[in-house]
Image 1 (cartoon, rainbow, N blue to C red):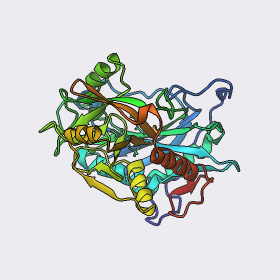
Image 2: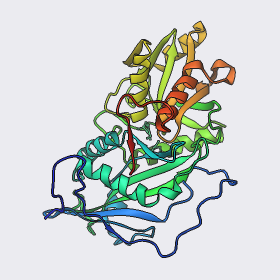
Image 3: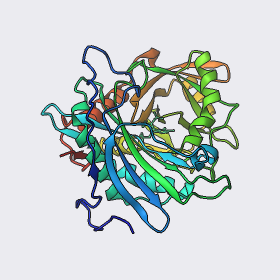
Image 4: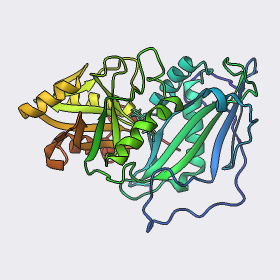
Length: 368
Ligand code: PLP
Ligand code: COI
């Protein structure tokens, strides 16, 4: 029996049990710049799932280790998913989320692909709001900082056969963060990978699951060793077409047109990507979602029409790309300076997220 009582949106249905910490940690001090993902708040959200019973026992408890059977299926077959979103502190003190409904929808798309039971979208958003509200004091105020929210689901059946688990835990942890890249808004160097492959159509590339990230690590280590921040993946079949970066979608401005790889089943449908496309269209720019080959970038670079390159993601926001390495050649973009549209998109998206720019699209949700 599930604890859900209502299908209506905006009505609290989870009956979240709350156990407050008796041992609160000191908040980070503004003098120490926040890194990405190294410290965690006082509480976490947990909810269990069992076949026949549904999602149940929603609770907020002190941040603590989780105890799992060593045979828990997540450890052996990787049946797990995760999401990433942020809470922002507006100048007037309000705490704002950016498009959490999109993370809830993407959770269920991921879950379907990984045979994880779906989670009602309104429950996802309610759980996020509740745990952020509980640790509201941890939402930092300095420019460029936010509270990163990491919801995830793990398969917990103690069983060594390969099949979907019958039990799961949905957990949300929170981490006050600064910029994802040490470069901040300075342009990053990106390595176009033509040896390793991250994902193929029909695989799990469009799901947000750990398997895609472990698949990317060997190339990322190689790129780091060569002095590059991230890998830009090519398609796994022809190894010709641009897909996405390790933790971002990618955009190009080619001869005045904003171009980004179309969603083809093997790349993550980014929420920032979706927002950037919407904004560029509103600004009257021509936007193309289509296949983009690495050779097209080389040709545009040589013709002087590769005008801007930037990545988009929750953690990274808008990340200008200053150099792209492909097959032993390095394309320098805008002499390492930030492009006009990268800057305008960064200012607009962070402006909306922080409540400085009026939200006319229903993207911002206040945590009250
Ligand atoms: N692609 C990958 C592989 C990612 O990990 C991310 C980060 O979430 C993105 C793209 C960007 O997605 P979003 O804008 O929803 O954060
Ligand atoms: C995000 O941008 O939220 C991500 O999930 C990237 C992450 C792998 C740090």
